[in-house]
Length: 443
Ligand code: TRP
Image (cartoon, rainbow, N blue to C red; front, side, top):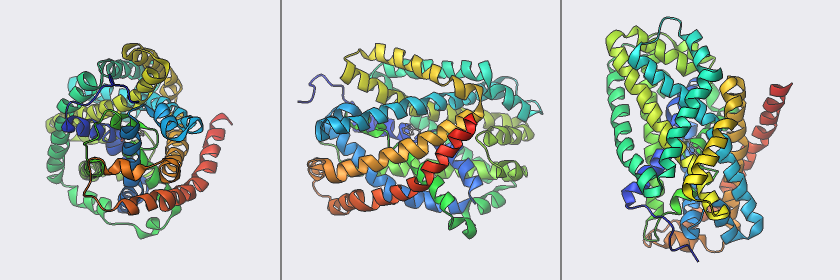
């Protein structure tokens, strides 16, 4: 039976904001914009939206169903419904959490550093070199460690006192900042050109498989799917919650913030004629382009820059919390550790695991690729098969708290056939490509 002492969210709003906090992060502001820039703007956006709705949403609901149904962390939850063989999928999830947070913390460290620089001294003229210094070596590692300490401290305070409280305060602030920045960006000279690039598709690109693959990876990353983060958060829910509605709210907020972040980033880039810089996009592009934009805008640029990077830090923090919580809840349930001990020991291990990414942005890029293309897409593939075919009564679990809903059949059919078929197709291409990228790193 479920553990009577298990922690619970104190309110529906607390859960929703924590889950949205997990979803909204660097993925929405940094990864989404750079992938959109690289993949023909609107072409990518259209794919991303379609995949989020048709593939992401059913998988999100599947995670919520498994988590709430089992009232356990991923390893235990999958074992509970599927037997020991399926607990291995839970182990893969926890491994993915380790891997993703190890480099996510490094990028988050850059954003902390950037926020401080814009606030105090401003960027000089040579931003590309400055980024080189900041993004690698002890500088990068130090801020990554600092960011991890903050994440650990919050997770250590528990579901209600740490995770929920943080989300209740920070998420509304993040919405306000991003929406405010979008209004400001609309007044810039480059706004029309930026919107045009962002919102009118390049149909040559629309048809390419590469765009599809990037869009699928992004849909999973942005919704925090494929490694049990949403599953873990749902395990602290009661059975009266309307899970289909929650999944729509979470996905809607995630898409909304990604879209609005694009309305901020593209006008800024085009206002200063910096689109060339982003064209050959790498992980670092926005970290060089946007400060250049802020620097050229004078005093206002400074304020806008501070707000922008503070929003990034906030988004990164609430996302990192969910990544660490997957690992911590598994240690609590599976190893019998206290929350404090699990948070500090595993948090420290993840911080150390980030060292290679902190010393090389090439390594960071490859780890990002491995995490997304193999772990998240593979994890989503396995999870959809699990809920579609192996779990005893997933429909009964969705129905609890959502009696009036009628599209269970569609959901289950998507999970059984369409979602795994689509993900298998994407993986077919993504796996060899990712393997090649890993080999190239060592070769
Ligand atoms: N969704 C977050 C973002 O967009 C990142 C994230 C948090 C994540 N938890 C996750 C990604 C779990 C994959 C799985 O920045």
